[in-house]
Image (cartoon, rainbow, N blue to C red; front, top):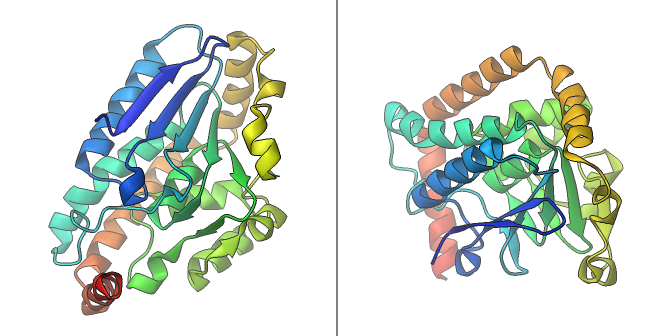
Length: 254
């Protein structure tokens, strides 16, 4: 089974699907490589108007990193080697020359929110919830998603969400601009969410994305994402992180 599905639609856009619904689409090494390959293929392909990123199933968009691989028993250097490739994927996604839309079919936690934040726009189903919960595990976002969050919403709101590490409802995060649409189940199933984008040409969508990227100060963004990954790597070997991961794993067994 392919853990990252890439489909090209007749209407001219591409869909990348995180395909581990039994694991709440948690990210592992194979998925990181799959995302990298998919983004490189899309970048090289002519005529794609925009990209959709979504998750399989209806439980979760992405639960973050798979704790079997992103576990707590790592030294800083090991953690950096583990985190850095996904940070590179998020940068590739954020700087793709065509618009990207996260269709959030279910909840997103931790790295799942980082991945969604790397997209230009986010649409979610009603009843879903989202949280940068890394702060509850003794760390910070490790894939550069915190740095990206400061580019997506007001700085004080970004800082507060990261600091409190709370899970928030779709309606709450739409209020401060992280979500662009919250859809009823009927709207979600109707297949009409993307209709306003389907009459745009590749030349149009590339220009709109070019304008967006020009506002992001990409050189600075790359540095900030790298600093975030390096800092989280140091936090990774802390006792607080190790204990938090162990508690979480025990809670899942009970």
